[in-house]
Length: 118
Image: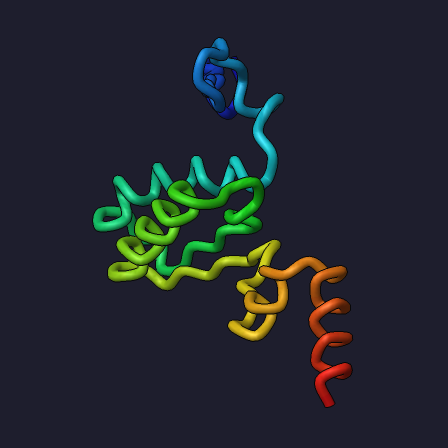
């Protein structure tokens, strides 16, 4: 026993379907830790007294339905607390999204065709 007490606690998680639970401290990345904290805070956000929550790289390694769920949870928590997210990725502008739909080789061919028409 010491000044912190006698108990030692270790959290185990299963990050992927079919895997065995492992210690969070050993397997979780920064983004995973942020998402775990998001899950905890989404449950207790109306009851705790923390005014601002900061999530670092909460978008790391997620896309599609998972990123949508993360966004919904962040919005729910933001009703009761200030939420700050340090994101790894930024959303591309509509112009960039349009450009990314076409491979660069196709863009070159399209430009040549347009040039030949003139």
